[in-house]
Length: 202
Image 1 (cartoon, rainbow, N blue to C red):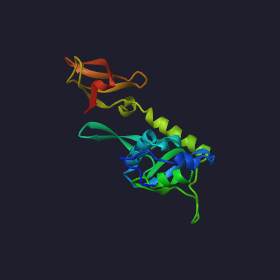
Image 2 (image 1 turned 45 degrees about the horizontal axis):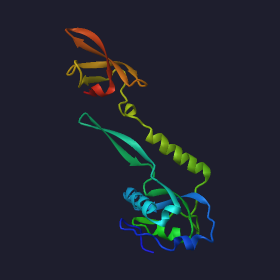
Image 3 (image 1 turned 90 degrees about the vertical axis):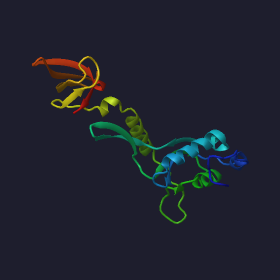
């Protein structure tokens, strides 16, 4: 069987091959070329939609984390793989399915146990729960976490009637995503309550 690519056609005969077997659905780990994990995910999800593989492959996951970088006062958020070189899949693994997954473009092999003829090793339930929980936690990171301002920081107002003023943060309300800032107006300190998005670090 040919490796999966964007031109994958309907896989014939897979259903017949598997009818006599009753595999258990489980999570496995594919070893992929580092930097190509997203491409592997794209190819597998395409095959799930367009071929019989969708009857045996149920989820493809690449756990990521959001990393904040600040350059020249500008904040950018990038996603970084938590497990570089690995793609997690939930599937019913049989000989034909294993062969097709292993021969997907940019896939090296399954993560296997020790030994020359070791079979692909499924994840324990505790490992699956930890992996899925971590993925959910990272997906729920909000912009408020990115704008993690601290009391005492000096910021510049960039929108609203006080745009252009510079002030010091006196209070951070993370739940409401608001900041209390003290700015000088006519030589007098004036408190302002602003949204996180209305300021930027100086």
